Image (cartoon, rainbow, N blue to C red; front, side, top):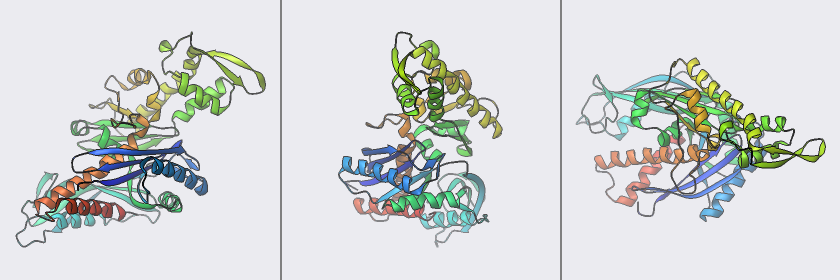
Length: 411
């Protein structure tokens, strides 16, 4: 694959819709375009107005197209929310080849077998995530390709979501003149970028704090063990500022971004600004310290709610790997100090390292790119091990199409 393939991720958030275009090769991933638009018609991960959501998606896509100079026709869509749930599953098949060597088709068949579960009519499968493979009773296998055996099993996690919410999201994407290449669970995608294998094995909590909601994912023994969404985020800080200073929400958001700090002790009385007041033609004078007195309590509460939610999921105490924090709110100056006071000293902030997206708000979108590329690279190695398609460019393209087909099966 010499010139690379383009992968496009679409992250429909509560406050922003973001499109990221990446050119991926076997050697690297390069972000070549980014588009964003104010999110309209969405609330806490669900579509509440299709026409407005379509408009936001189209604006973000147009922005990315102008930057890259290509027409975007197919996107991977991220999804999260309280409607998402996890359930264990098990699949078993007989190895099909005469020499009993486990190949790509055997793994695909056992993953398909794991999908055969009884689901309520209102639920739909988003993804099947393998935990471990078992070959003739030997467990703990992460990659069974090339092994010799008669019986292949998989212990997997079925990720399901509300059929209504998923279909409405797909409907919006299609009305924006796009095709859906696949649906990806955002916490899984973000973990690809944020978490190491050791952290996942030790136990770690990933918190993505966005504008209208906070997505949580708990990882233990190398796999996602639980997920949840809290209805708190940066918009609540903005709302508090608007009420506290008696000003418009738009003004409150601007002040938060320009002057806001999360710790009162780090704020300055010398940083002074004028704030227009609702119902009064005169502006009031406010300093940064007064603004911080509004921001810090809400930020503290957010981290308290995160800790309480993790405990309610059955994970008490500070995880060995700590809390890994990302999302737009984590761009607030000095917020890590507040986080560590509530979540422990192991808390840390993660942002993408690619040029142009070095901000926590891009973590989910960039994570989706890395998640797809990892699947693609695994497929390349699988095909290479079985001496398929020796021509490099043809092999790379074929493998990526297989990955896209895998994700499209869940639509």
